[in-house]
Image (tube, rainbow, N blue to C red; front, side, top):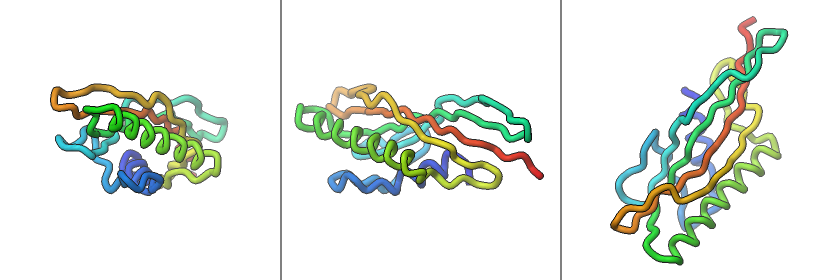
Length: 142
């Protein structure tokens, strides 16, 4: 299982918003109709190699949420949803409850930033985003 699939599965366990349960997180783009969610890679890089040869990486992702955004109540509820998801991810990080990665990879931390409206269509559908940073280590093959 890929790292992004592991992170998608992890996000799908968020159940803090009963009004908008996340049942499926797609890859790269949302469906045309709300409510739809997706996770897209947004760059990565190696940050350090330790003395034992273990390598630490920073993987960045964007979580997209396509939601109705035509009126003020919808937009407020969308931010409630994004803030709830962000808080949940922060809490999971604080508790050490991180995504389970395959093979020699191990999640070290997860961080979230920038919950915001990214785009709005003429039909009043909004595309929101939250940036997610996953720090992970790839253990040296012994």
